Length: 184
Image (cartoon, rainbow, N blue to C red; front, side, top):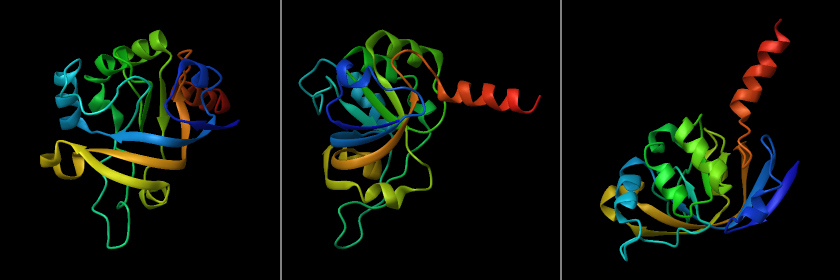
């Protein structure tokens, strides 16, 4: 099923999402990778936190530098498990969406089920296509991290797939099970 969602995310606009659904996100998302996550978690609840966490969506990406005339360079997802140590704290403080690739650990899945958060997958290797959905990009924190700085992106119809939904359904587990049943 396809859904078009205007951000920020809420329990209401994530409740009908199921694993495997295609979602087109429009609005503001923030970028952060491992080093930025460590700093974000250290700043939870302080005036130094760089963006409103309630309902926010984090994209696990370190975009390449923009070529002249471009808003952003290639912006493909990075592997999400590197953020698993930090994600439960962010989710527990209002983070509602994450975009990356790869499976998540049990602590992340439990935090998501408790709060109604969603984990979306973006297609690895399609960074140039995804960058085409970015209308603005502004570094808002940790510029010293270079491409891994926190960016505020305004996106339109940013294509993602629901990998983990708010009910705890897991597309990786479902896909593995379906495959094993097909080869019996």
